[in-house]
Structure formats: structure tokens, C-alpha cells
Image (cartoon, rainbow, N blue to C red; front, side, top):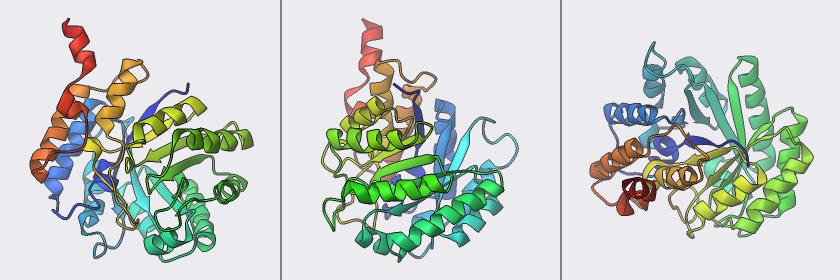
Length: 306
């Protein structure tokens, strides 16, 4: 099994669908708590039109805050989602460490999300990733709706592979498959990731699963078995793409960490600190979040107490 890295996306994918605006100061406090818990890869937000996604209006300010000296550990990587060249320029100006960008394998989802079809979008994404590289910035490219689409249904695997091949031909090796609609199931996950690794064993693979039909964590383990290294998850299980048919939360960060820690696959992350931060999220939104460990408690802690 690959060494596991948690990429926390709650500040972006978790909050983008929430109607209650989160103040900048509260976002800063949550990021500080995540860093204190040992999460060293955090997606702070997306560089999108604030009229379409008001929750992301302060993304630039959030990055500028944590770009100041001593605001984050030196090893921490703060990522930002960009959809176009304007977003890339904004991210360059405010201190993004890693740019996340992608194209949907679904024509319908692609046009709802970006206003462009996949063929047009993938060329632009490759150009943006290469531009980021010239500025010595990391980038991760993704294929959204890789496992299915709420509008179109099943997505042919060949369509996913064709986008992967274009990424590889451009020299891009950090690739994520995103289950935007939550349609993925474990055998499909193993098949897609396995075929991609056959193309190039040096690819750094990431996965992003939504829990629409309750298979998020099972899909993470399927990805783990194939050699996926980066796992995107959201604190409290928040989230959902506002441009898909059925928006549902991400794999819950604390649930994923708890499960992986039972197998000693992730170490220097404080589950207790994550749960404390998740409770604060629930208090802010005044509702019970979908994560399980927050409700049931940690088995790891229970075992230690016996």
C-alpha cells in the first residue's frame, strides 16, 4: 500500500454549497486548528466568480493571511482550485502553494461547471498547469465525474483514459480522479486507477470521493489497494458540487483518519483535534454533521482505555 497523505478540502468543497456565509476570521481559526492537528495539505478555497459562489469571495484574503511569515508550518501545502487563467493569476498573486485544476469527463457537468466542453477545457487546463510549473508552483490536475455523472449516467472508461493520456503527453504526473456525483463503487475504482498505473508507474494519484450513495470510505480503500497516495476529504463530511444533479458531502476527514489510524497508515494527525474542530463546524452551522466518529467516538481511544 502507498504512503497516505490527507488533502483536506473542507474549506473549499465543504463550504462552497453552504448558504450561511462563514466570516474570514472563522475560516482562519479552522485552518489553524487543522494545521495544529497535523493536517499539512489544505485547500483554502477556489478562485471563482464570487457572484456564483459567494462563500469563496474571501479566498484571496485567506491565502494572503497564511502567506505571512510564521502563519503556517514550513512543510504545509496550501492548495487552491482554479478554473481559468484569471483564477491562476489571482492565485499566483496571493501565495498559493499548489494549484488544483481539472476537466469533467461529462460534457453536461463540464458546461454547467465551467461553460465549456471537455475538449476545450482540457487544453486550457494543461496550459495552466504548465504555466504554474514555470513559476515553480506545484499543480494537480483532475478528471471530474470520472466514475459517473448525475446528468449523463455512466461515463465510458475510455473517455477518462483519453484525458489521462493527454495529461501524460503534456508531462503532467499528479492526477486526481474525482467522483463528483458519488456514483463510484469499489471494483470500478480499482479498475480505473489500475489501468492508469499501467500507463505510467510514476504517476502520483489522488482520489476525491463523495458519499452520495454511502460508498465513500469503501471507495477510498479500493483506491488505497491500487496505490493511490493522496486522499481528498472534508472535515465533518461537508460538501457537494453545486453544479451536479444530486449534491452530497465528501468523505469525512475524521472518519477517514480514524479508519486509517486503526491500520497505522497515518501517524502524526491528532484525531482529537480534528473532532474538536468538527464540533465547532457543527455549532457554527447549527446542525448535526454527517461524520460518524463525531457521534460514535473513537474505537482507538476506547481500546487504549481498556
